[in-house]
Amino acid sequence: MIVDFKYSLGDVVRTRRGDSGKVVAMSASEGRNEPLFRSYRLELDDDTQSWCPEFKIESVVGW
Image (tube, rainbow, N blue to C red; front, side, top):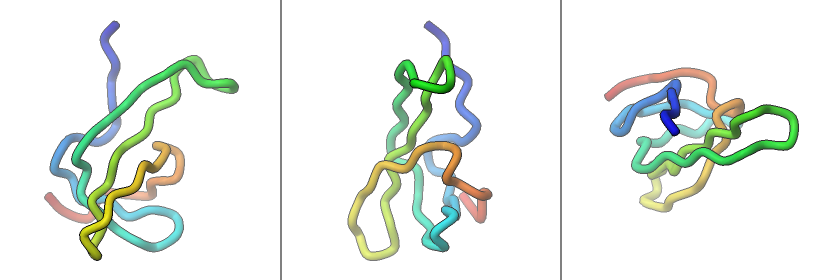
């Protein structure tokens, strides 16, 4: 299956919570409300990593 992701590896994105992080991994699975649920593993400013669903990302702020 080919998945079109809105963001790419290495993109620095800002989330709705106001934090930002670099995309280091991507995942796609079947969602409940959408045919495909996309999420991104972000490396945050404090060197921790966290998964974030695509709909909670506001914008790209750098590369």
